[in-house]
Length: 256
Image 1 (cartoon, rainbow, N blue to C red):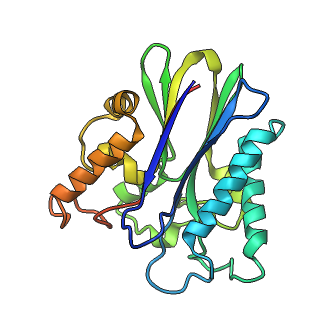
Image 2 (image 1 turned 45 degrees about the vertical axis):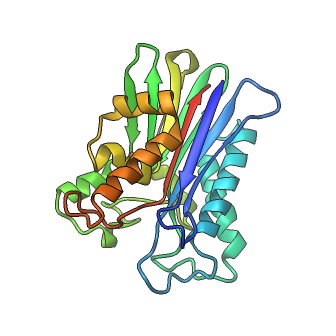
């Protein structure tokens, strides 16, 4: 088994709002990974006294623990329970009904001797390399479709006809993209927040297959370093317009 992961803040003056981790149960033969991308709110009140990095650490830790220990629960149920636990931990101090309450994209994958399950919510990505070398990106493409239609995203967050993130409503897990593969179909997996997937989706340095090859050969930190180099080469966003010059980035590569 090979596992490599890396994460880096977009700005060292602020906490990293991404979360990436992996669990290998003591029984052996399986594991789980979780990647979250915290949604940075616009300047102003979000109804929470804790902040997004606190939220992603709580949600990510709970989702990882449930995914690894509760094999009887589907990943959607694990996400629902993790959201409920996190909401309960700050519902008495924070306004969870606030539309900007801390929230995150989510990727989870879980494997055992027979199968690999996955869950993707919002615009982080899971890449799966199948045994015949094809790399399959597993995406929740609702944001991309809304952007292509020229729609304003803010009013469509966690709204029917829009897109969904993990915030305070456990029911959002039913909106995730889910599925499974036979374990013997899969060679390796990788998960990226959109700060790392910029290498493909924003800067066009390669396609998903080339991105996966880079992760295998040089590891997740090399991918993040290349994203940073592309960002530094276009500091004002002239060639590649974007909301943030540098974004938090996280990536994990797993050969189960």
